[in-house]
Amino acid sequence: MTKMTYRLLGRTGLKVSNIALGVATFGSQWGPRWTMPAAEADTLLGVALDHGINFFDTANVYNRGESETWLGQALRRRSARDQVVIATKCGYRTDPRDVNSGGCSRRNVVASVERSLRRLGTDHIDLLYLHLWDGVTPVEESLAAAADLVSAGKIRYVGLSNVPGWYAGQAEAVARWRGWPVPAAVQLNYNALERTIEHEFFPFTEATGVGLVAWGPLANGLLTGRYRVDLEERRITGDGRMTQTFTTGDVDPFRPVVPRVIACLTDLAARTGRTPGQLALAWILSKPEITSVAVGVSSGDQLLENLAALEISLPPEDLARIDEASAQPTPYPYTFLADGIQALVHGPEQLRAVRPTTP
Image (cartoon, rainbow, N blue to C red; front, side, top):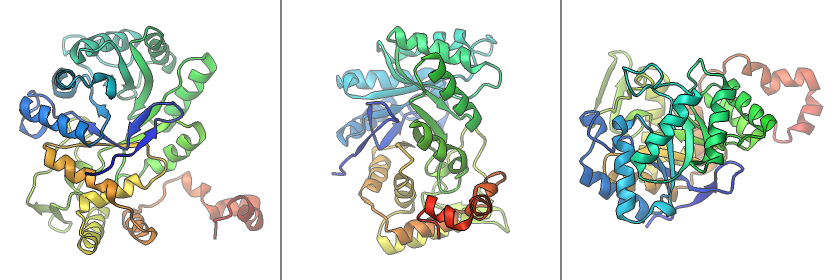
């Protein structure tokens, strides 16, 4: 059996499994791509617990709330609530008739937590993410509401999800200044096809200690090895179906980086006897900046396949191959932070003294 490993969530004392189970598919409201029968959801949760997963990721909008309900019920059937870390989220609009049912206002954060507690059937939420920056609510209002919920014992930790780097920095600084709980984690899309967070959030987590949780590690299925992408004919072929996401737009499969990364992973898979998806996960898990990777699956077999990534220790040359295949042009202003420009500031000798590993 794959041995699970655990990491501290940021600078907290909370230990979470390196692989978290995303349970957006728990429920019956989102159609066949994003649902499963309740019995299968219950079995899947049992497989996760049996293999050491203690970190479960849901949201108040997943399957219109059923995800939280089914997760809570499955945990109660196993008397496992006290052994796991439940992360849920609020921010997306939940009622088209109520203009205040979305966003990160005090009103909605507090109301959303109360509803989530009822659906989960628990007296506290371990980690509450603001699901996204709503573009309107001042960060002070959202953090003050979260701080009050922590004081009331209804949530244990505060997190951020799908936010720009400047917002995360502002939230961390404001929380420290006001004496409120600082964000314990930031959850962001990260995989070999989506590496933009490396520029802003890898340094941010190193500087602040905020934990970084990756979602979408297999790029909606593109990195599982089941697909081939033809850029010229703009066609995808394969023996699987690519999951669509309702919240962030479909992954663009026709960027030049996509077939390049798929080819790299497929080649490594043939040489190592692993699947491309396992290698894509192992590449993420090798990043010291990543605390946990939230995987979404539709069966226990898929989860076991993903968990096998924990057994893989890719050598530096294979990690470098994936890095090279997935590399994309560095955007401004990060070009000015590269060693070549920094040498013009500090001088090459001093730069080598500051960065000993710099060639």
